[in-house]
Length: 168
Image 1 (cartoon, rainbow, N blue to C red):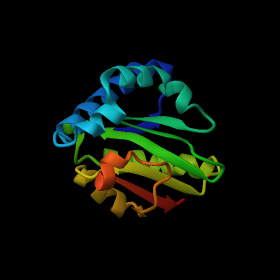
Image 2 (image 1 turned 180 degrees about the vertical axis):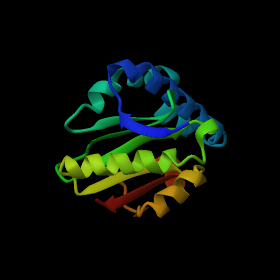
Image 3 (image 1 turned 45 degrees about the vertical axis):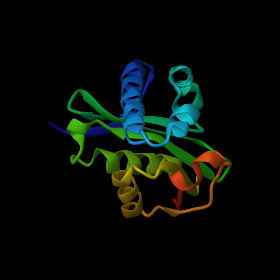
Image 4 (image 1 turned 90 degrees about the horizontal axis):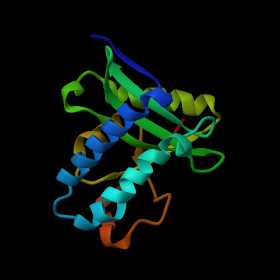
């Protein structure tokens, strides 16, 4: 099958929400030793409320939601939103296990960076949890470098949240 990346629309939101739930489950599994992380950023009720707000939080022209498909099967997602006039953040980048190795993560990032450049952003930032080592390796390959926090992180989590940035 062929991998494709496209801007998601309202019809895609159930698939995007399902991928985001799988992302949350991955984060929970990778943070068993840090329950404060899950409670702070991924509590079940707050996360479900967030999923309903995704179309507004990542609305064009300040942001975007991308969907990766293997043929007709949704296998990944990524989202951007405005931090300031120069900077956007990429969030909730997730690729389903069955699609890993197809290049979907890289393709989602490249589509998001291309769109961000077209939208006039000069820099992209992200945060990640220290246990997501495969994602951290990809960020490096894509030119992201460790950066200062772009929001005040929870002091309880200390060095467990990593921040990255790259010029567009």
